Length: 615
Image (cartoon, rainbow, N blue to C red; front, side, top):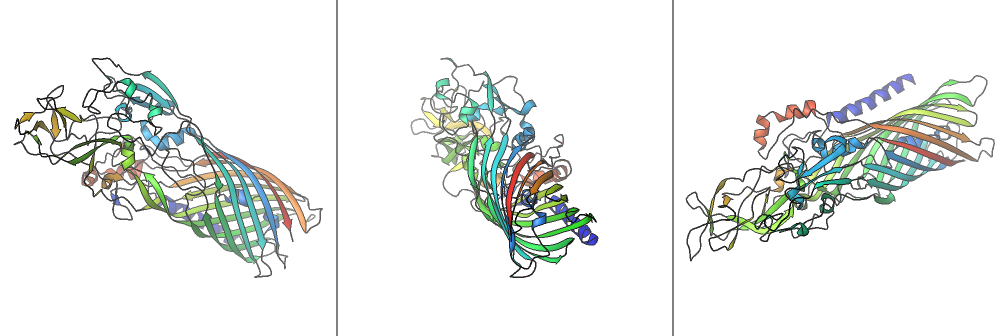
């Protein structure tokens, strides 16, 4: 029996090594499984658009505590089993880790995100550009986060030994009815709303639309701008995805329905060893990307199939009392999570959180717009429409997870009616793999470019508005940059063949403009997740009752600590659209050795377990 346990321990450690080596949090210049979207470096210092925690239904601890003496019986020749109801509660801890998972090193102290306009003189280098949210260019505020996830569950468990079907076989099924509650606990402190006068409006004509924009035309705060209810200037549709919830969001569903068919190959009064097959039918919520901190019940709607190993050994029994003994139990389950269609949001390569920037829509030019370089005609020009980038970078993908492991090792002590369990749980999951279902570049007549702080309109000498072709491809969520391929703009009309475009100053244009497509997106999948849990359980069984119907009642608790991300932001990967340049900069070795991202959460949990053994 000792040799068997050594083999089991070795196999569980090997599975974790496999999971760690499959860390897809650092997809260096790879093409996704579907072959249509390019991924670049996503490290621990970058924010992630999506968090998939451990499913509320994936918990071998809650499933197995308090029942060892009633299952895998050696002395039974007819069916027997248990039915148990386990109400439980879990609550996330370490909110700093959750906030940093989403925003990376763009957070300042106390999980604070700075929002500052492009014209703020002393801008913080980590601050997001307020202009992208329709806030005045002199705006300044700070937004603090303290994310919290808690779950209320009622787990229904049923186990039956199928001794009349095949000696040593059993079937079990469980499903937790779950109410999950996610709250970003977001607060905003506004320091400067920006100047707004008749001579100096928040935005002049041509910056965000043909008309000047006053404070009354703009969102009132960053929190208001991220609710999907506001527009400004040429933005005709509000932000549709990745919205920041102002208060807690709740979901109630069956997390998963998990079924197991097992066979105890060896069993006696003092030990048993068996194998089982395991399947999970998804009944929880499907990720929709509507909110950044989106409540998830279950495993993301993945169908699971796998196998496991179960063993126990009574290594010390009282010579005087049969019902006093110590036992060691081991349970390890390994599942594959099949593809699930999910809606996800993505950033552009080398630009963490760039999905919250602004895009310009371009259409074919009217051939009157040209640049000073030999008066070359412009092919595309601004189409009088701004869109939040996330509305463009959100689409469906088929996500799968190659391996998930759930391993429990526990020591139990039985003393007549009392049972005490104390143990360790390792849960680990490989990173996601994507098959793109809708990530090809747009093939219609419209093209899109990063706006930055580029001007949208100028005017000819007759003060007729002219849509320009300015793009700002080097802009990030934290900064604006120079206009791409900048040349002096001219406009050709029948009345005045060549006119210099003017605004507050002579206007430049991008010749040619630099566009973005979905091939420029960083298809960084949800990374590897690893957590370790210590737990205890105490229960009492009324063994002096009729042996055919034996009730039991227990209580337990756990502390689960997620593996943290390795961060060395001094060695940060600066990948742009040109993946060859990234390779030349040796970005891959930096990310692989110094920055590793993990996607689990730390949490505490308590439960009650009431059940009935029957023969």
